[in-house]
Length: 119
Image 1: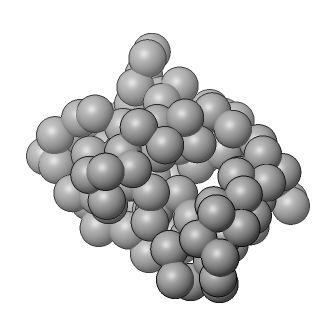
Image 2: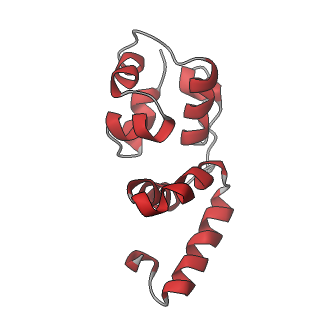
């Protein structure tokens, strides 16, 4: 059985948020989570990219790579995704490494002249 629900819940996302993040409908996410369908093809790759793991992890036959991504990086990605003015940054962040995301956050913090939480 796939691990979409586990990965989504671990990151504190609702089905709708995950659906928006990878460009599918909420019912599609629900079908995956209830075992009616497994993600395949491009959607599987988008999920793996979104969760920053291997496609086999999504499908439940590989363990998630430890230390691949941390909660701070996921928080930054979620903040970028929610703000319509920074959605373009969210799309870029999906392909960025955790190190690049931290560097971008530091740059934005410096431009804002304050704490990253003020962004």
